[in-house]
Image (tube, rainbow, N blue to C red; front, side, top):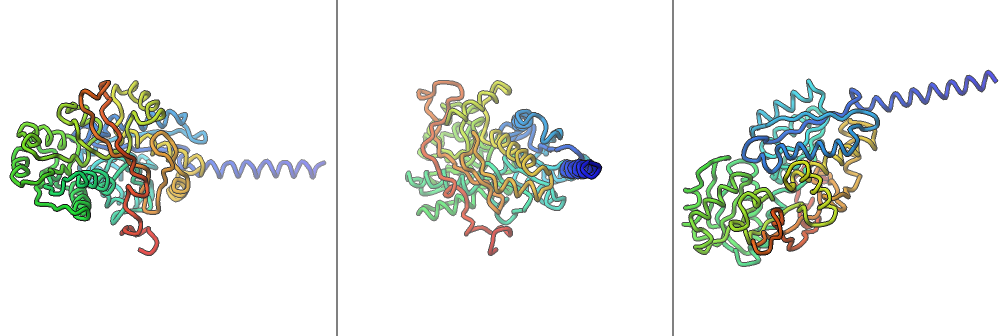
Length: 405
């Protein structure tokens, strides 16, 4: 009897020790998330405060805890400046013990932040940035590029426009990492498709006057004016192009990174017929409509693809922490990469070894005013671009993590 009691006590002690060890795998007994984005400037509408709300929704839907450990979130405005973003993330990790950084829009900021995250061995989930270099020459084992990139946009919109006769291009490009990558990727697609680039001009981020740039585009004689910019830069480009009668004079405009909020802000009269590539549209399926209605009830707006992607990426991260019972980057990244993503945002999505989350993309066209049945009824989906066709093949990758590189 005494022996049995000793064995039982030993078993209980072992179980308690194992439980304590398992619990200790979540550092500081808390999962801490940092949300970093442009919260007030050029890109604030496509991610910004709305992306923070999406992240909070994901945390709330998870019950606010993972395996009994509280989830907390902090946020900051990076002002689209790499030094500010990198310094804030370094402070979060060193002082606030943040485990994962989400959001991120400016590609230059993301590349700088990912270097810090890699050095500190934490996790970053990039939903707003576009540059395909993030999972190419600047890839890290600690980051995931979740929603879209310049390669996918180029091979969606670029190919479609050239196929329809837009075989000569002039680029109006934002002068930083994203714009350069966008121009480069579309140029490659245009040339591969038999077209040519006749010229281009680069503009500073968040400039207010696009008159001289649009005049150069008109003077080029190109059939297509490609806007390799985003956010307020894109909307200001389109407004100026309308004022100068670019389309009326016979040229067409290809918005290479257009978001739902851009179309909503400009209105269908200005944007009708514009083709674009997107990773998400709120009215595509019953599941996208259900989640988007919840988001709308909370924010008064339908979500952009970035805001939807932030919710999905944070949920996928928290699910990986739960399954691995750890917030260590190696354990969480391994779990995320081996687990398919099936939710309202992506069907059979998966994270490759280079950190690229591959999923279907969609070629859309902005509706005519006569085709729209409501304020947010803005797109019609023309075709689905399969995941394996939408993103850069690993065979073409320069990522150090890809076998054989």
